[in-house]
Image (cartoon, rainbow, N blue to C red; front, side, top):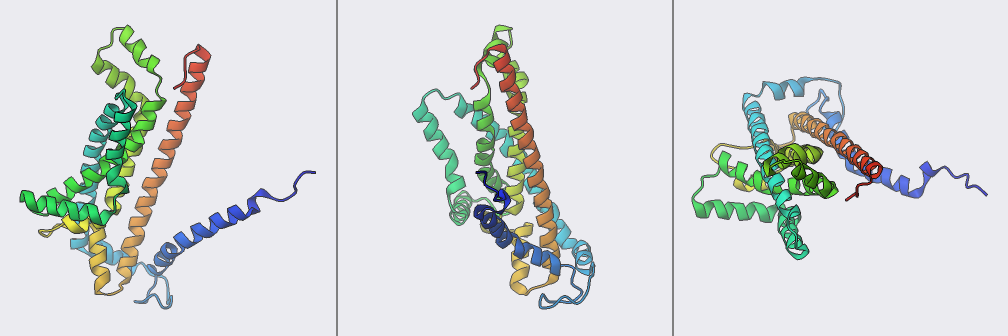
Length: 280
């Protein structure tokens, strides 16, 4: 007898929706009161754009936004280049034990607590005499973004068939041609995904940046924390809502890039099957 129970009402689906509700309810609550004409979150008095206008009228805040975006773009671009190089180096390592060791070292910064990473960078920069500011924040963001890029790019490399590289070499391609005309186009979706993930992590990071910022240089996350300590202001709600929407746009972009990469990989496997080539 066919089960007439609607699968959309399974307990697992209800649990999933409950988890999403718990996660996003505070964000929606914060965004809702960013349009409040009052000055507190104890009651919604009326709709207004005042707090958003206040955010865009704050020159110091706009400079901090610019600092955050510059740090995110520079660190993401540099970490993407280094991450692609690292992923290719790990992929070309023949010994499984050595490859696993390299992957473990790569994942240290991902699994380590942000407080430990931030304190370690602070001690490191102090020992080297590097002044805390733009340079220290940039180096720190590059350091914790590189492993993310490696994780994004490495699966694309493993999906690539070795016969493509052998065919390119047989046709007279140099190693540089193989890299630029075969490898990089194949892993392009992973590169873009790694870049956007690194950009998202850089924009959202607080713990590491809090330790290594200084000399009048700060980022949005640290600024929001500083303002929140002085008292709850709905301008913080407006600023946080804008950051959330921007981050959400990055995540959606990453999702579509990943879907495109999966579709491309499925197409390559289909062509390989049609031509009698192995899928790896």
